[in-house]
Image 1: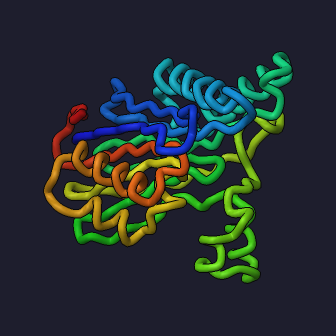
Image 2: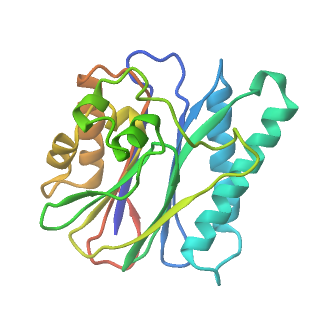
Length: 250
């Protein structure tokens, strides 16, 4: 199984407040995490970095007897506590936070946990793209209530307003989903710097074909840059090729 990942500052922002981690484990699985920080000055960058550090410590040290669902939920709650604690201690970090999407994948399933509007997708070998996460955002809540259509949401002035994020409250609810995958399938994990500007049809087109994961990552980042590059862009692509071991394709 293969993976590739990349983060790009984009064409507008002065700082890259995204952060990512891709880490094969000794459980024959792979951990992937994408965090999209928010906050004044460099606080968003601090929040996303804190989240990744806390996630890596929780997910790579111990807990092997737990389920992937339990590991991911616990790690995200730990990251939330760390960010909230640091924001309370340091005045410059007040109000900082981050989205997070994390997955643990083995040869049979992908377990995905998230808070916020960073996303995970599954592309089947048959070319069917499925969004595995449900955005914790104001516009998505309005869509669920029938008060806004998806086309209206795309241009809504409050489309980036989150209803849930890490670090802004002492406790956070974590959404977790298990999804089967098999040889020929792909998993995409990304920040909204991709999905806010590149629609699902274009994402699917960039993922199709026999190119290696690194080429698909580059194609997705390039698509977001062509769309204006208004935000930081982070993309990780994981490909199930039937092999038992994980290989970095950067």
